[in-house]
Length: 136
Image (cartoon, rainbow, N blue to C red):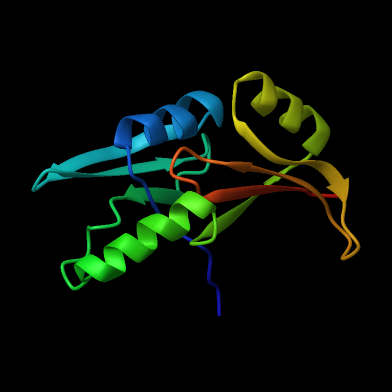
C-alpha cells in the first residue's frame, strides 16, 4: 500500500488571523479560499509540497454539529486542547527563533523530549497547538 497524508483540517475562529499566521508567519502558500454561508474555508500548505495541505475551517462548518457541541469545541480550542498538528523542520532552534521573532505565541521553547525528539510548540490564533519536531 502506498499512502500519504493529503489534507488535514484545523478549525479557526477568525479566518483573517489564521490566514496571517499560516501564510505570513509559517510561510505556507494559500491554495484555496472559499466562502459559503458566511463561513470561510482556507487551504494552505508548505511551498514546494503541493500534495500536503491544511484546510482551515470554521468550527460551525459541519451542519450536523449542535450548538452545544460548537460551544464545547470553541472552549476547547481556546484552551488548546481540541486539536494539534505536528510539523517538521531540519533545525528546530532556528525555526523557533524565526517564529518567536514574528510574534507567534510560544507554548514551549525547543526541548529534548524523553521520547527521543527535539521540539517546540506554538499556538495559532484559534488556540490550536502547533508542535514542531526536528527531523534528524
